[in-house]
Length: 80
Image 1 (cartoon, helix red, strand yellow):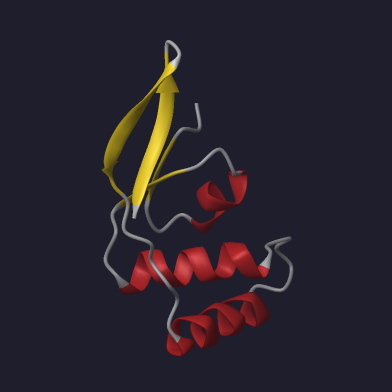
Image 2 (cartoon, rainbow, N blue to C red):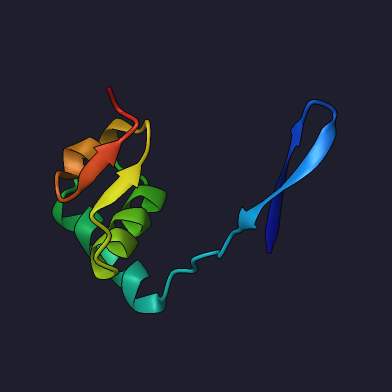
């Protein structure tokens, strides 16, 4: 899938974007995480993001969402 953007009135092609889909096991991990840490105000989307990041060994994530910093298992880029 190609992503595009507009620069000075013309469309520029960006590099290919590979969508990442969650697996059933990752959703189960996310729901278990949310159940264990019910005191956190995390959404299912947060939980699935954390499960994907951790399962795939990602060391850093770009986000402005403070929930990512609360998780504390990876470096968060974008939060100052």
